[in-house]
Length: 77
Image (cartoon, rainbow, N blue to C red):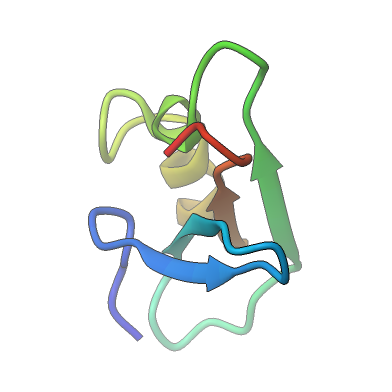
């Protein structure tokens, strides 16, 4: 699967919110070490978990064999 860090998928909640979800895959052909979910702090959004884009924490972890998801909280993405 291609790296989807720049293309958000959306998760709909029961109360009507659409939360942005970003995925970073590990190296192609390598079994994932684990699946991680990164959450942002209060006054930011999921983009902060991979800033600058392609060189932040999420990309760093993906390059080391993890599948990484970044999810926005309600009202943040």
